[in-house]
Amino acid sequence: DAKTTQPNSMESNEEEPVHLPCNHSTISGTDYIHWYRQLPSQGPEYVIHGLTSNVNNRMASLAIAEDRKSSTLILHRATLRDAAVYYCILRGLGGANSKLTFGKGITLSVRP
Amino acid sequence: NAGVTQTPKFQVLKTGQSMTLQCAQDMNHEYMSWYRQDPGMGLRLIHYSVGAGITDQGEVPNGYNVSRSTTEDFPLRLLSAAPSQTSVYFCASTGQGPNYGYTFGSGTRLTVV
Image (cartoon, rainbow over all chains, first blue to last red; front, side, top):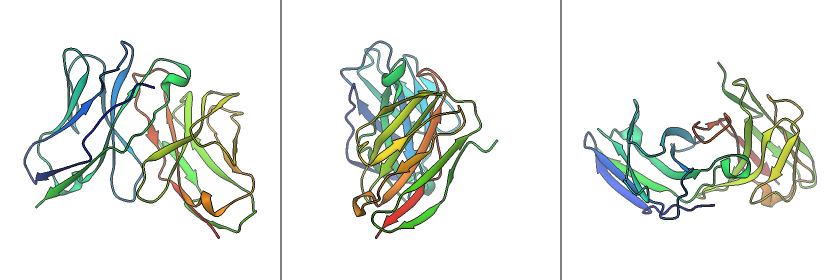
């Protein structure tokens, strides 16, 4: 499985933008970049995914480097509810490659 | 639209007992997975299925069995519970192909005494 590397933790101030980085230097051409988050005492929640182009949805934006070896999840205005563990995961094409393998993720703390 | 439904939410077992954790999804998803999460740890894949009748092992399959007789259901069986299986169990499902996000259930908190 292609692996991702994320910092262990980050801190942010409420109502400020947050940029969560992820490195995936061994990504293959058919791997999608997925982001999930896990709020305290809850199951993981899908946030966003992309292949090559930057993506936006109501929760966040995903910026993907031109060489696809890194990506950044952007929360435009952090709230206290955004404090969670964020996982960057590569999802491949078909069969066993399509399963999600979770790493340790980034623990995001948001200061009031 | 219920999404992914897991039952029970909480369970206490005695060592050696067996039980089945239920998982059902109503989104017609091909892929389903079971994960366990120990306190302060990340999620580890137990078993997964790419469609009805097809299952495979993940990282930590020992002590667990699965079957997938229908698209909707993916039960996880603990054959003989051990204290090391005390954990929170999450079921997840997704459509075919990597251009779909996974939907997770709310989890089953299992304690084995």
